[in-house]
Amino acid sequence: MSNVENLVGEWLPLPDVARLLDVSITKVHSLIDEKSLAALRVGERNIRSVPAEFIQDGQVVDSLKGTIVVLADAGYSDEDLIVWLFTADESLRGRPIDALREGRKTEIRRRAQTLAW
Image (cartoon, rainbow, N blue to C red):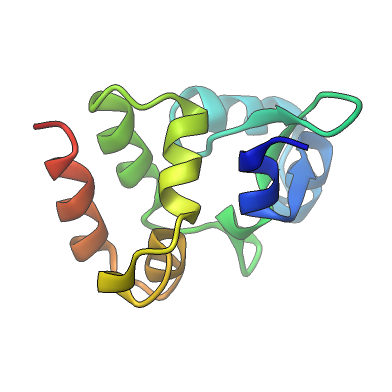
């Protein structure tokens, strides 16, 4: 298992994401293409999956898309941005993904924007 797989913990294969969001698998692929979600190939079977914590209350975490776009614009690959979102930061008292799930997007976006410089 790779470092990013261990860091994230729970992954959802794309069909599971579609079921949780109550959308088609085609829509899940569109969400990934438009940077609303990020996915990696994980596990022994190398299945394209999304971190489970990207989904909250049957929806994509509200402020995730803008954060993914900012990180992608800074040159981060999907793997890099997932690692950044799931790595604990003492100054945040947690991980960026936790802050986004709590609605603290301004602080996270500001930090993400500084990565481009």
